Figure 1 (cartoon, rainbow, N blue to C red):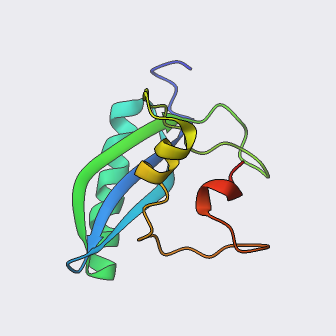
Figure 2: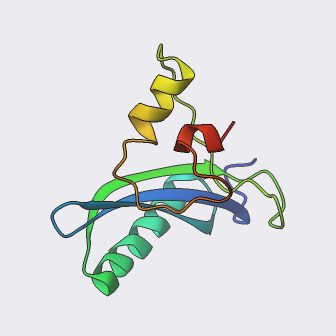
Amino acid sequence: MQENDASTWFGVRCVFRHGETTYEERIVIVLAADFAGAIAKAEVEAAAYADDVDAAYLGLAQADALFDDLGDGAEVFSLMRDSDLTPDEYLDAFFSTGDEREGGVGPSQHSSELSR
């Protein structure tokens, strides 16, 4: 990826608060020359989205350059985190707190079991 290439797609995750207790992580794709440009574009979009849905944008934007062509199965965002937690502890700490608003498919399973 070249920093001056204005045709690079980025996935950008922004975090919002709805009301007093509901948080949303939202990923959008933007076309930008570099990471700073992608963050700037996504933050403009995040502010408009927050106004539209009566939420608060919390000021967290994380970008990832897309290296796949857009299409079925293309990666649009990736975040790597180092942790000493076991896989079950990690999923429970960050993704399976019990407070998520999500549906399941197939037999009823613990959220961390669906990903394995």
